[in-house]
Image (cartoon, rainbow, N blue to C red; front, side, top):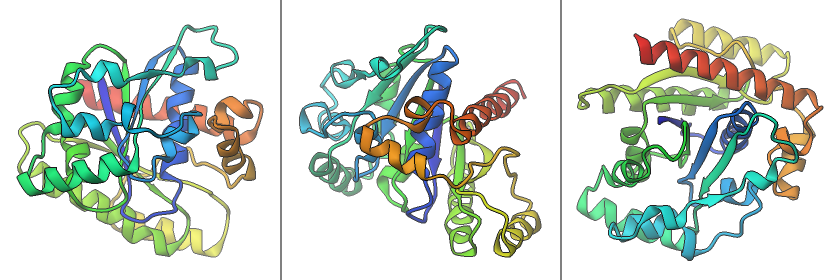
Length: 264
């Protein structure tokens, strides 16, 4: 069960939309995928047409380690109209109050491995786990990184987002310094991509910092945000759109990089 943390330290970059669409694309390709919503806003949860509630929140699991986490995992495979490859789409939802409470308790006790222990109990339930990370440093961020095998950062082609993406990569290196098995940084994904002068500056900054960047980018598209109102990732709601095609291509590139790291 390969675990991928998706993050940035700058909100509004499209982290959640990237998370849910990558997950949906992998499920359509025939993989068993579980999205873990570790963001207080619970947008990944809503994106799968699930109303946030304490009853199924990962926050409740983080508060009480004796609860069987399998009771909180939801099967949302029905969101796929067609599933010829037999993939599965699972969700470990979030709810703000329980996750805030859990975050406070974990911070007080310096509990860095709570998420790792939950996922260990769910070993084998999915081929890939994708963690939607909170866009700031803190105990939830640390738990997500320590639970993951790989990580990707999300940025837009705007200079104001580079700091958040680069800071996320720096935080990985700092955590890796105290980790027996280091997390693999697969690279930066450029979201809402468009050809502008500023986009060229962003490319230069990333090249100067020797930061790996995914070849596949996600174009700017109103359909991506529109899909949120339907409670489905754009890959499922608008499968014929250019944005959906890019997400599918991006998911395959992530698989390729992750598999290469696993073998190395």
